[in-house]
Amino acid sequence: MLNDRMAHARRAFIGYLRVECGLLPATIQAYSRDLETLMLDLQERGIGEPGGMIPEALVGHVRSLTRERGYSGATVARHLATIKVFCRWCIATGLMKENPADHLDQPVKWKKVPGVLSPNQMRKLLDAPHPPNAVKEGAVPLWIRDRAILELMYASGLRASEVGAISINDVVEKIGVVRILGKGDKQRLVPMGEPARRAMDTYLKECRPKLITAERAAERRDKGRLFLSRTGRPIERVRVWQLVKRYAKLAGLNDVHPHTLRHSFATHLLAGGADLRIVQDLLGHSDISTTQIYTHVDRSRLRETIRTKHPRG
Image 1 (cartoon, rainbow, N blue to C red):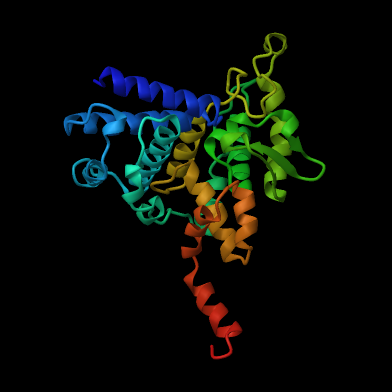
Image 2 (image 1 turned 45 degrees about the horizontal axis):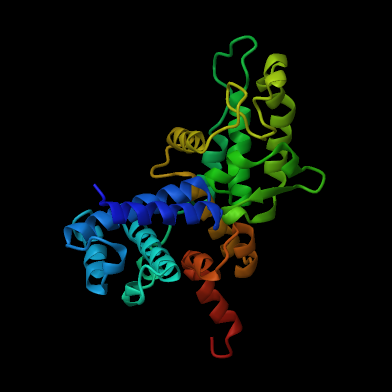
């Protein structure tokens, strides 16, 4: 259990993230968990307040994440980001005078290459939603909704949290774009692509109206959101995760989650010749170094570029 000084600093920091930074709830929860792990470790090392943090303690904590807890590179990178942001906040609020996190490696060094699906694997996943063999009379064709969700996630590189937040008014069918509210309440416009547009049109005509009965409409359960659950309420992030996992299993694919579609979106764009800056804008990354991790995916294209463009290729 955290002592009073640590607990107070943690509450104040989380309040700062929520009110001043406007981070999404899922991001705030991740910061909160990581910070609690750090503080409990610091207390075991004899450090009872944030101002007592020293570089040696932080290095020891980061090492313990891999050696004792067995965390992946991506998880360690997230913990490092939490430590750095928290230490900067401590400096700004006067809890410490020098930043002990300056001696830590940058998180990018801990990141591992994301998993992606091949175009053929992606087709199998997108084709997985289909009508059940036995259809009950009056049953809502939820597979139509599920296909629209998968098509849109791959076509536009969406996060699971962004899918549930899309409003019906965010879809501009006439020009085939959707308005996305991403991390830090940053808005971006992303194209849907023709397959996703067709899937979306089918969902809006044949599925969504059936999810809103007259009584549900009167209660305004849908809150104006695009994708709805069986009960007519906005679909939640965890449900998007479940859908992706379910259809990946049906398609015979392993270790697939919502971010796999986002990784594949970026990877396939770059492999097709898209500019890195454009992919950065489509993903909603504020820093291009975050997008650069996807440049690993097509070394053959890099070799071909050198062969055809370099004077001595």
